[in-house]
Length: 223
Image (tube, rainbow, N blue to C red; front, side, top):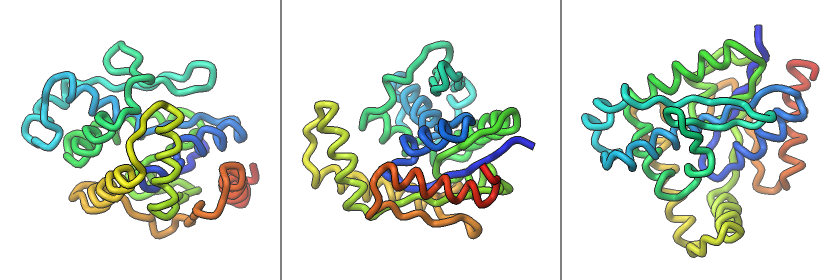
């Protein structure tokens, strides 16, 4: 059986960047499921479809092909045959992904794809419903979080580095709204799996967060 590690948590918790390093240290693949939903959100924006319109989104969902390839150990996310890895990290795409991802038709398509990938290789998967829905039998489940203020400050600093000067207060407001959407959606809401280990990184730096997760993995897999 492949090594499966599930990491869930709210927006801005550092799941993607931390999971990248953890997977590299363990010499396994990292599947960023958020990138898959973001690619779907990008498709909705390009088609002019309101992500909050379930009927329109569900009717178009079957026409969207999101796939993942690993190049030099890094995930590249494709929409159809186009590599959109560099186009899916904007606030607009994030909002579209959050809106569309609550609809059952979208989640079924993405979850099926994620499970197929996890069955083929040793893999760390991060997202918002991995331990509760995608890989409920994963031997290692981690819920990675931090306080909203800390998460917003990290996102604000990332935005500044990328030239985005959105005020911290707006970043925090958007983050809190995203948390409410993710935690209260009817289909596969964000929550900590009963058997997941809580890792709060509010007072941890990046390397300390990575080391904490590696210790948890080592206790289970001996890696």
